Image 1 (cartoon, rainbow, N blue to C red):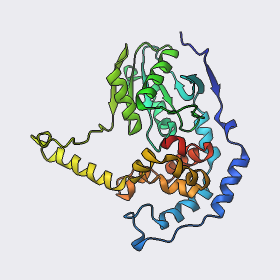
Image 2 (tube, rainbow, N blue to C red):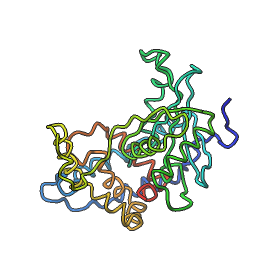
Image 3 (cartoon, rainbow, N blue to C red):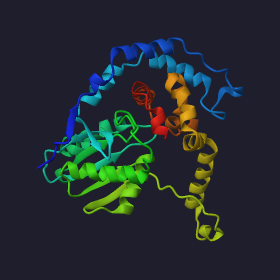
Length: 303
């Protein structure tokens, strides 16, 4: 029997008043773009031409349609460790389905998993097998989107992992697994390290590992490992937001909370910093950026 006594059903449509959308449109109409850098490529950061195109797309973007997508699945709010936590919970019709936590990225949100819920909970309707079914739980990390406000400091990945384990127990799941990418991968790792009772395992899209300086670490490296090391070097060369978020998040917060286009530019990770490998569509970018803007959570997510 599932336990919902401490979880309230949430209708996200009610969370964003029309006045907030009107304010966003007004700000977009009065955007002042920066002067383009030489060549206007991605070498110096988000290009002005890219921003100009995305601003026009944003003006025509239908947020209410995205709200409808979000409201098409059951949303809930609960409190764990003094923190408001939003989550989506969709059970499969197969009672013996495997419980699965889907953990989102930065600067992403629970919305990145919406299209996966149907195939995971009802695989037969998508060409799969009944034994492949999952009960799906998709939380918003504290400080992200509707998991606000953040009531105190110290929300490390380990603390988030403990909160998610408490959430799964609250929902009545004695065992579960996780899938995560980026920040979600870090939380999944913490759950794997803690290995709470009944934890089935973690599937991640990244393993974050950095050289310690010991030259023996490179013994036995092949082309695949050196390619990964080269990618790590490239990522560190473009990931300046990590330094800002890790040291002075409240400083950049003033700009992100006041300028939707500034927030769009700061979300360049969604475009893989312009390296041509991003599979995120402009509409998906605008869904994520709009969610952060309308909930004013880009700063708390950065912390």
